[in-house]
Amino acid sequence: MSKEIAGRTFSTPEEAGVEPPTAQELEEYGKTFREARQKLRAASPDPEVLASSKFHDEISGTELDPRRGVWAGISGHRSVISVGESGRQRMFHERNVCHFCGRFALEAEGWAESIPPYHPILATWDDDANFFNGSFHVGCVRAFERRGEFRQAMVDWLTATNRLITVHGEDGQPHEISSTGLGYTEKIAELSDGEIYEDPRFNRWVFIEEAGPYHFLELDAAEALSAGDRIRGDGGGTSVVLPTEPDAGIESWNLPGLLNFLAVRDLYQGLLDDLEPKYEFWEGGVGRAGYILTYSLSAIRPLPSSIGDFFARYLPNYTSKRLEDA
Ligand SMILES: [Zn+2]
Image 1 (tube, rainbow, N blue to C red):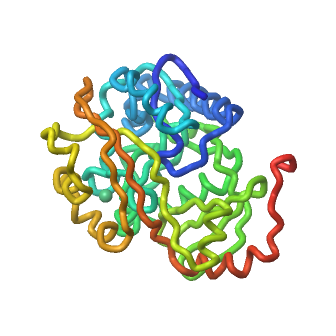
Image 2 (cartoon, rainbow, N blue to C red):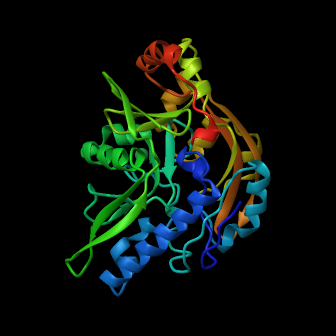
Image 3 (cartoon, helix red, strand yellow):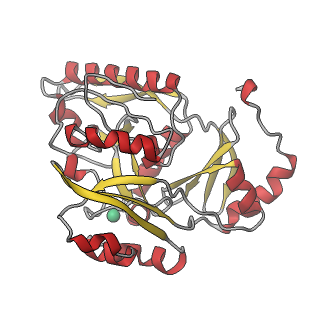
């Protein structure tokens, strides 16, 4: 399933740790994005300036077009959405840079994640940009001074269906943009370290930490946690452009070796020590954007035990939702 708008392609929902969107949701995303861009253009003759580079994610451009087939082969339900021609080259290398610390973010569910650009999330904490998307280390969010604002933006996105957000353009006037939330509308738990919201249509939840980061939970994950088990994050393959070209030895590097090369091992030491990461090199090669590494990486998801305690009480009386009721 793929979506083409104006010939520019990027982003996959898996990178945000979210469910792949349905065809209908992709339609809505595309519509939202077209509306957003129209509003932004109305607000400024230079929407790139207004929206900042973060409005565009450079997960792929022409550089990665040849990779799209590979990605589709790796993960059967990857979706591609594309939104306009401008800025194709510019932000590509920023894609795996943590929004908060500026260092490389190698994605691992629960540890380093990203939000794709078709989710217009208001960056209220950022004086230079209207919208936030891109990569971040989960730990950097927790340590961020204005994490309360980040958290509120996440709550607004995760717990809404459709909403209007207000953007102030360069003309100084407010412009309303409609935005599609993820639909976890029902708050069902307030725990000591966060809140759990339920999707009324599907058997899925999101735990939003008091400190800002969020974690998606499917039914099987909730059941495992309620039984006291630890759960492993998504280990599907993904591709990333490395900041500099490695030597051929990368094919046999272990995860600490790769993290050393990326100069971010300190940020991942807790993952190495406690979360039993499984890393596998799949393939690598030089493209126009740089060296593209395709790999898989999964680890135990760092979730507080209070989630499992809650689901142990909640699930025995929970009625599983059926697709036909959605
Ligand atoms: Zn960071």
